[in-house]
Length: 447
Image (cartoon, rainbow, N blue to C red; front, top):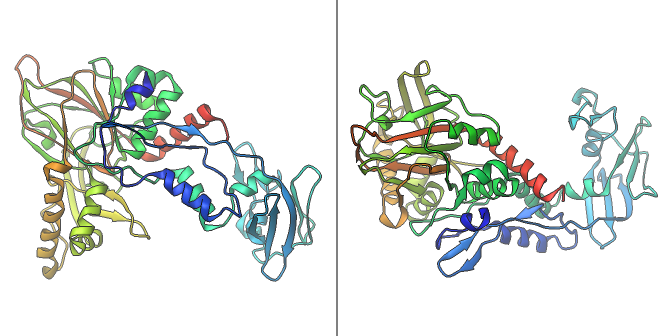
């Protein structure tokens, strides 16, 4: 059931897929034979449907034909039985010796101190042992032994490193627009079945949003879901928070008015990575939810208005949040509207019009260009062809990437005897990715 329900999303704009990346890397390194990732997700095409799934990619046992030290280059060369070759720096090999003196195996943690590492070390000898491992004797007569699979997985070629980073962090995304039919999963199955949990977390990472169906329409369910991963992110609004129309509201979300598209908590320098929202009661009228793919919109902005993109990725903007809830708070932060990494790839969106501060720490000549750039980005996000609109029903939990998606809500009218009520919670991507790797190992093993 979990696979069939999670498969229901309609004709998304898949502009990036991890599988071609892996294939490209494998082809580029065919002489080296990269370690395959432990799983991949591939879209399976049906009429107006796509499927997210996971599958294990078996890794063949690697054996070494020959190993030698290249003294001048200070590299160890491994020739594999398939004819490929891998190179490993002497310093890196000594730094990562796996013996009990250098590595605490029970914690998979390094014991060797950097102060004790000879970063200019040579090698006395190196050979392939009878059981197919690499044995190295260092000038101080310390011995290191490395497994062939361990070495193969850590090949330094560009293509091999790319595949390894994708396996570890799943950074490739499926971009989408208004044609997305949001992936769905069963709440109880996610709680109790690792296969269902893996499919949910993979979709959450790749697509950025998943609806869980079938939760009890009562408080406490987002905490149960968080326990499936690890623990909740405590913020100034508490471990969980109740989205209701409140008098003297300390947040615009606690009103019945329209909420424009935003990410939560840019007033923090490290905003929560993942958000859960559980519908306990829905409004009598209105209250529809809206989401857009902020990464996709940033890509459109870069293509249509490169100057606006440069402005939003280079200028830091002030955000603030002040009030009393779990405790009293007075937050101030400075964030780029669009964060990019060293390669210019979008990594995070920080935008909430309600908490954007009246303080704007920019020189006068940059103020108008900033407003122009921000308006250009917001206009792209508000295009009907980019916005997914949906209505949550009691028992629905929407889980989404708060670093990527911008979400909003239409205004609503509630019945006096049954007010609109959502319960929310936050987690960070570190614990979510940790749980993903664990359930992936449980489902697919160490392959």
